[in-house]
Length: 237
Ligand SMILES: Nc1ncnc2c1ncn2[C@@H]1O[C@H](COP(=O)(O)OP(=O)(O)OP(=O)(O)O)[C@@H](O)[C@H]1O
Image 1 (tube, rainbow, N blue to C red):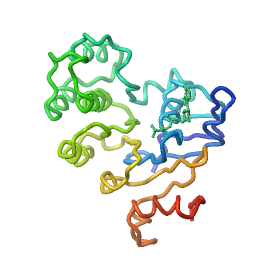
Image 2: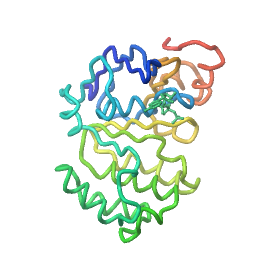
Image 3: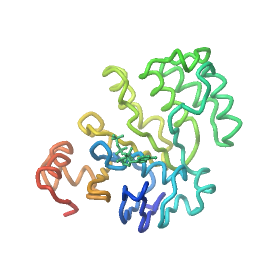
């Protein structure tokens, strides 16, 4: 299996405070991966570094590209909707995405909007928190790229919709693409995850296949994740 992303010696500080320290990662193509960690662990920061929305030291390679401006063509990430005027309609945001991204797929977007019950005539300001999250999911997955980043995509979404979306994520993932999805709670997304990556103490505490956790360790992914905090240490064994 080839790697869609390789990160070497990545460091990031903000106002002299170390946020991420010596992050090294290899991420394979075709996977759904959970990026886990407590509040403030650095999950969003890592995603922003991958897309070039934040800048650290070290190397980030996505689909053979190293420069932030080149990586953007291979990674889909929607960093909030704050950049759009409140009065803007969903349809206009879609138009913007279509103009900016050559890989934007109209058919996929229409299907996702329908699946998520989003109405293109609605204004961003009129959307509930959950519907904003749904719009972020739809916009992110409407591009055809090798790597999708979803940052706590289910946080404001009601439990019925959440289950429906989680169960269908596999259907929206192009076969050879990878989805990196961050969350605090692993129990709901565990069934669809091929692998977990845990950020703790400013670095990667653990990267593990979920099959290996279940079969070799005889643990649920949730229990394994919690054990990383009980033991107070890293667990790459
Ligand atoms: N631009 C910034 N200004 C101030 N602090 C920042 C900035 N970017 C990151 N941080 C700090 O970096 C740390 C990591 O934040 P980040 O949002 O990446 O964590 P997270 O794992 O995504 O957390 P959560 O699960 O709560 O969303 C936090 O301590 C945060 O305060």
